Length: 291
Image (cartoon, rainbow, N blue to C red; front, side, top):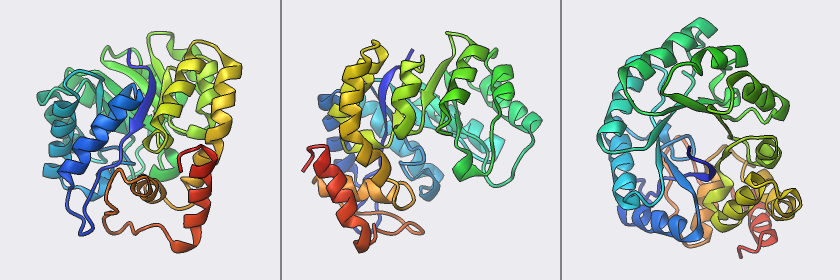
């Protein structure tokens, strides 16, 4: 079971918006050296919505090749079209991804039965471990716990990234689905409490900027060292907050560039972080000892 600090990796781009392959190479090596436990490639933070299908698959392939089995790779392969989600998941399996992360279909607002049948169809079509991803604040689509419970009995649906920030809801998921089904946090601000309650890790935005601290915090939480984990998390809390002063991944890409790890590129319709909020993100980075 994949566990611990799982970075929802940004996708490096040049100033003109082209994919920055050397930047991606360096970023992956940095994460491995800093103790990141797994990489989630081309999720929300990886700008999946601004990459075309060819680029999407190419980034997943490159990350798998770079990791060389040293840490697991989770490929973001969700779509609001079931056929496209199947195609992306097949492509991720073909290049050796360890698992796939499938966001709820966004914009078209399916029913709970539609969600069940969507995820069931992808799972039956592609024999790779699959992690559901519920982030209703972005998708306008909430995958209810009772629907997750139905899906959890499908053999290769192995977990969920719950980005609701509702810890009691996450605990209810664990009780419904049992210990073989991994519940991951997708909300950095509440990830510690979810892990202390039995969650398996954090698919994290903050880990892009503070990979070592996030790895240490998650490790402490997973072994039940609550005081140690809370002390580390206290340093990270300003980042958990200020990395969302504008829509993700705008602030986190700026912060990683501020560290000198990537170029400043981002694609329309996303724009660079506003000048007015850069000082608050920089202050959060200083509070974590990153600058």
